[in-house]
Image (cartoon, helix red, strand yellow):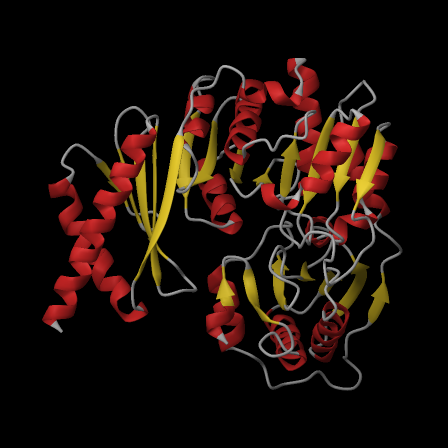
Length: 448
């Protein structure tokens, strides 16, 4: 079971791995650790209602009360968690429809750590509450407070014409209403909740947003937003239907917060140097964390940072300690009005950075040895570099050039990412590190 744990929570194939029995036991274990009241919601996946009910059975069997939100975006679960002992979302976020997962929030609305999940699975209780101490279950009457909260973030004065691709996911029940309540005109696509995600799949990447792009151009819309299956990630298309780089969107939003409040921001080790450039242009400081929004939040709290985010479109703001795609959309509109620019101008005047990626097959049993060897050899091979071990090995040079070597947590590969202002340099760096990695593996295999 522990292999199902990651920074995203407990995740695996629905029913086969994330089973009704597992959900029951997780609910029971959570209740045993901290008996109280927990909100529970789920995404649109076909298996989600079943798994949510079993998890609530576990909570109730352990003596805890459950408040059922029903179909709801994951950020809504996080929002209501703050009013109770915590909350649980049954979701696999942007993963394919055959997956599902369990994501737990504490009473601050923040994702719990991987250590929390490990402990939860190690200490599954066999003790049920007695007949007279069983927990109760009640239904939450809608998401009204959450919708009001989102609307309260909006500072726009003009009426925007917005295209939204809901991807048949959980934001179908929130995003159109929120934008209309904020006074905007909404043009939705993939509006019907459907656990098979027939419209484009649960992840909003550039290749999957052709319908939204076409609708923007056809109707002369001002902007387009797209969300993942559970609503914590955002992708943005400009007024021409062109995908806005996630790195640029992240960097501009971070700069917006620094301009207003000062201080620092947190991004993960895989973020582009354009983010550093934008933040430092306003006198802000950049801190880096491991990949995963719980690590972003942990570092934000440690550093007292005002904003944090990842280039998958997951941002954490002072408003809610959980990524929220619709909230992020509202903030983007606030930013555009504040700067008085069109979406396409977010990248105006910025230098080009070239990002290259590759991966090298590496047996899981060799990964730790390989990384240990590289940690010793890389400073000698690249003497004028700064080496970070936050998540994998990150080499940083002057002029915003960097490379990241990071073992995959789910596949027998080590991934290499490199970025430079010159595409030739980025490609050369990828090739150089790939050769070093292969030589290191060959040497270790000969020694075995």
